[in-house]
Image 1 (cartoon, rainbow, N blue to C red):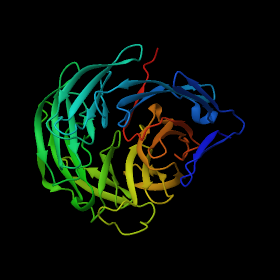
Image 2: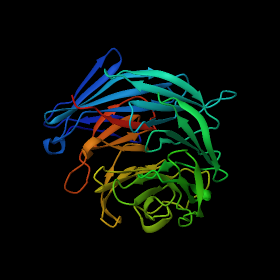
Image 3: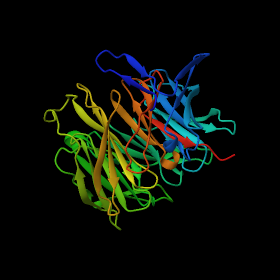
Length: 397
């Protein structure tokens, strides 16, 4: 059996269940280190990796180390990096050891992009801070790392910026107004030829653009909108690693939609998969149940979808098997902690990382190789309502 930590939503108390393997919690100079056991089968071939997460309230970037140790993994908070403001988004450069953290700006202060470089010994240092033209929400690099993309949830647009050789954000090369508001994410396709911008709530849409990886220019496709079903609310994006399929989490529909990417970039709907029915019809301005993030394993075999429940106890991650034609079949459901906001798959697909934001915990679930189901989690209290994080595989020694 595994050691697991379960948080009860109603009284917000943590219970640690001890089975055959002992949990150890160490407090050293304010840094928490946890060592808990996992199934040996789930740990075979696990590579060490690091997690970097933004703590907006604490104005810092958290560095978490995850290390395999026999039939266990160790989860340790390695340190923090102070930020010159409240961080919101984070993106990892696809080639260089560089991260960009965005600061939304407050009052007369403009939004900024902070570039951090990772040294050989694992420490992060700020190498540049750039002003951005507009507010930001979701952030990403294009597939070359030559351009940095930002979407604005409240203002309904996205921007493309040049990235200098040292990873610092340069001039803006494109600005696109897609809707009045609720442009939730922006991400180029795996071949870097197209970019899609989903909008949630009443601005329900998936806007389609061509992308020029040489210049950073974008052009709207015709038709412009892939027209998701009414009030689905497409939110976040995940691409299949080697087939022309893309998946959108649907914030209002509580499910996930699969599309085939045609040669001209147009999206052809394959399937709209569901999870559980809504408790109540969607009402603008009322928080109830909402799907959040979506992630696909590196081998393209499984997809994970997070469901947040702001008023009840339905917080879950749903596991789907991905068929060769891109369609999805529901495998299982895993109850998780309060308000799962962000999902990341670890290197070599061994674990799923879930930021349980209201619980202020990082949950690391082993992915079962045979069916994609999730085992019991190792949890670490990182003391922050983390909504964005990235995972970095450590280079081989």
